[in-house]
Length: 81
Image (cartoon, rainbow, N blue to C red; front, side, top):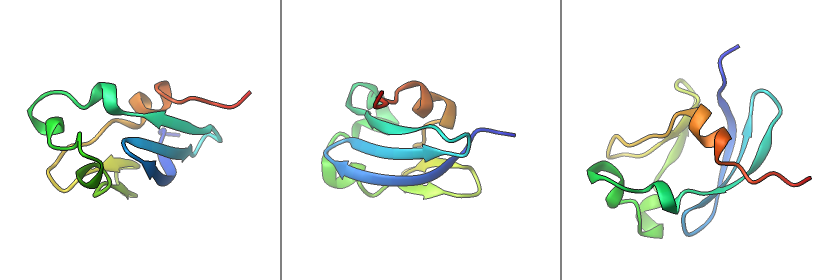
C-alpha cells in the first residue's frame, strides 16, 4: 500500500495537520523547507494556504506546481505521545 494523505487541515502560518492512510496523524510546520524558487512564494501564510490535498497523488499540492511527497510530510510530523 502506497503512503498517501487521507486528510489535511491548515492550522495557520505554515502549519498543517495531516492524517495518513497508515493511521499516522500529526502536525508539521513546513516553514524550514519552503526554500528554492518553487517554494519561496509559499512562505507567506495566504499563499501557503492555497494548497490542497490532491487525492489522486495522495499529497499536499499548490497551484504553482509545488508539492511535498507524502513520505517527506510523514517524516516531518510532530506526533502527540
